[in-house]
Length: 251
Image (cartoon, rainbow, N blue to C red; front, top):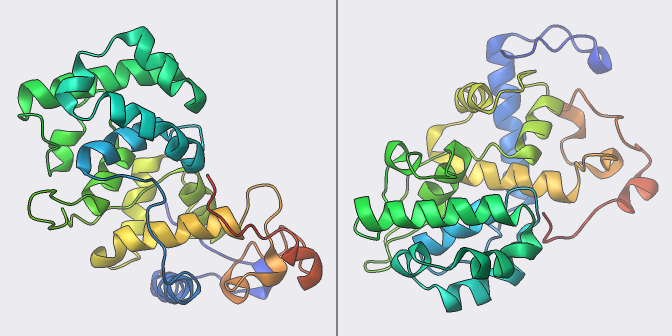
């Protein structure tokens, strides 16, 4: 459910229209702050992005990007990865953590791509989430950022990437108090124009990695301070806050 922002920094209870307007103003500010926001996983085709996104769970994009070159050199296609030796695969992806579960997912999704989709990554959410280890978040990352390697055309399916950064920030923004990712996706999807969902996700994630950090957000230098009911969660002194800012790339 959407939050009824009241009392924070002297604000009156917020109407639905007021929430939509505030959310879109915040989106515009984020667009100005992060004009180059993009997916920070390295990939050369949809299969690589799918694999990298699965590996990114509970670790950093930097760690994934250090791991995938060797992985893709050894298993360049879904057909190759589907028949990988589990122990060898686990050894390669071990640095990303939870390597046994991730290996099972990679083997399963690769076999699914080989057996049901001709080795190609499908272009619909309903098909993608039938693959082992692929949930809505992963599917939205792929659909919003992958492109056809033969034509160069993007998949171009708008989607919200509701990862831990995204969840934390939209709650801090006072847009919702929900904790269920699917409900968050539905609520935020009603606030932001659909054609901006993918790039908006990148903006929020970049903001969460760089300024609105989990433990101590850099409130004193945050461009959203005037619109955020959580202002003051972190230090408001600009000099102190500036020390907390992370330039990226990060998790």
